[in-house]
Length: 483
Ligand code: HEM
Image 1: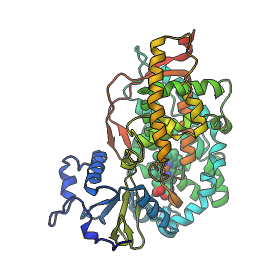
Image 2: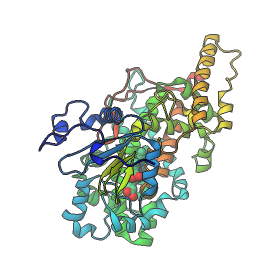
Image 3: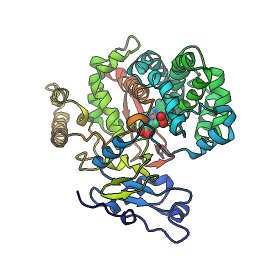
Image 4: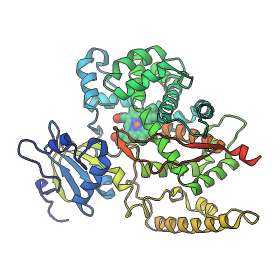
């Protein structure tokens, strides 16, 4: 291994004297806009070159940011992290918890915006109850009930063209809030009722984030904690205060994230009829419609899971995860001092040809095991069906098969698409979020053909990666079509 290059030589936008690089974001000229961090990341990727890293130095009040554009390097950094990984986000929340409301949070500050021993003690108290596979499994029937209610609500809000309303993203926020409430607090919050002003207030507060904390703290977590729900178990073992603070964190980060993921998955399925048809075939065969689903039912739906993974690859909800390194390191051949902030640009890596052939194409089959895939590439029995449709289907299958073969040949790098982060600090709600998404997508696509007639969606970072345009999906009832 050669001698590491100096930190100062990492490529990146040149800082000005005194103003550093902050002026770029202050002016907001593309690609240096906080709302278009996707473009910023691609620009840094170009500056970094193959397998390299880029740096954004001298931002006011911030250590230098290092962006390693390489899955092997990402693996090395994540794997060397110590027992207390430091993710430097939500400084306002840190300030709120540790300064403004120190008397309330004290030694139990929660997970978000918390570091060191305080974080690791809290995480060890709640980890088993939240992150173990059974934690999400037992919640599946009640989450299915929420999804079912939401699909009924979708029907009731369609316009005369059978399109969902312009504020459908807000409806998805309500679904996500209702789901977290059912899981964490063990109660139905009632967000899916018409004109639920409480739900809207909470959602607006979550968006307000900083202002939201006192409101959530008082309005919801303290008052609505029941003796069911995952937080109730925590209350039994670690006390009501830990449970309340945990509930606050779960609501803060568990609503916008899953709503954004649901929006992107619906959009990618609506614009890829082939994948939608294959999903519906799987649902028709394996999904119960006469009773609520349990976790075993979800295990029979591998294509559904692949559809969500593929959506999170193309449109990850969080574009880049971060770590503040606690000791000096060599990253992509450069010396990087302790205290630097590493931003893993997962969005770029999961959309690069070298990791995912034809990266812009939505091909859930990439994620299927070989045996499942072979079954899927068999062309359906279409002998009596329209021949044009059959020919199109053959071409589509050939295209998919060719991409899947390329993907098989290179394999999927385990660090190239990490929508939920990695290691001790990875998303504690991952299993719950996956189950919640699977249930909604399953129920919605089993009932409807979902189409999209409004051109390509554009996205902004807010800080989740969400569509700018109204989500006016068109829903046509599948059962009606068959009769
Ligand atoms: C598709 C949905 C979601 C995505 C993509 C997502 C993604 C992430 C990511 C990237 C992290 C940082 C992980 C790391 O540093 O390695 C994280 C942390 C976290 N997530 Fe999620 N998340 C989602 C849904 C949820 C839900 C539904 C909840 C709870 C109900 C949740 C609770 C948390 C918490 C509490 C943390 C902080 C963990 C810690 O610092 O110890 N997330 N999430």
